[in-house]
Amino acid sequence: MPPSYLPLSNWFVVSLRPVGQHRRLLHAAKALGADGLSLPGLRLAAREDTPTRVVLGSALQCAQVIFTSPAAVRFAVRLRMLPPDAPMGEPRTVFALGATTRAALHRAGFADVVVPSQATSESLLALPGLASVRGMRIGIVTAPDGRGLLAQRLRERGAALVIAEVYARMPARLDRTHARRLLDARRHGAVCVTSAEALGNVLAALPDAARAALLRCVAVVSSERLEAIARAAGFPTVIRADAPSPRALLDALRAHASQRTFR
Image 1 (cartoon, helix red, strand yellow):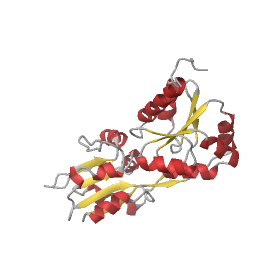
Image 2 (cartoon, rainbow, N blue to C red):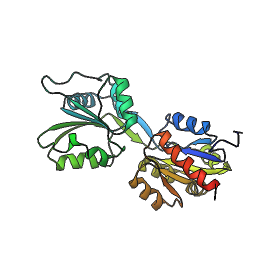
Image 3 (tube, helix red, strand yellow):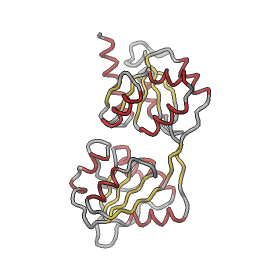
Image 4 (cartoon, rainbow, N blue to C red):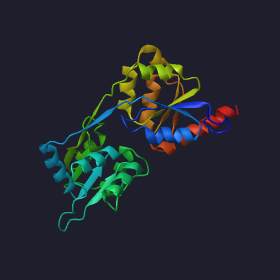
């Protein structure tokens, strides 16, 4: 039992991160006094076939390259293709969709990475380096079945895209243990939502009683779009974090928890 003076000592925090990626969020939540519960909304699988390698090689030779997630970096590294040399006489600009992706790129050997103020496609598209791209070749390292907004907008601006889909997102398997842990939780609940796909997968996979228990939690979301999705799903309380990082999500929850304390 955590000390009662910790800011989240009366809470449990639900992570919807992909299989094997819960540790950072739940470890940080535990340090603040919360119990942690993992409900993986996704399973990530590498795409290591020859066509993927060929397209990734072409994407990395573009004058501008965008990585949409830390997983995109990790799976590109698994293909042993990072970091390549820049094309002769053509400096490459590397963009990351968020600070966590930038950190992954730094570890992969990219020294200079451009990142938007918020980890959203809209913020990335607002960067000066992606404003005038007509006639340019832009590489995007990503997974299939995403929102598609980034590629759509860049094509509308006249860019030619090389999209390397280096991994696939699939629903994770939830069993009765996941549902039981959720039903047995006796504290205030908060679920961290950074992916609409993960949230949808979990809500679809849970039995009715467990789904109802999840929807009674506070939803901590990382964007305006996810706020609307969480409200439409039925969460009665939705709070916005500044970013999808564990620190930002838990900071938002701490602020909310302190307001509850003094009401």
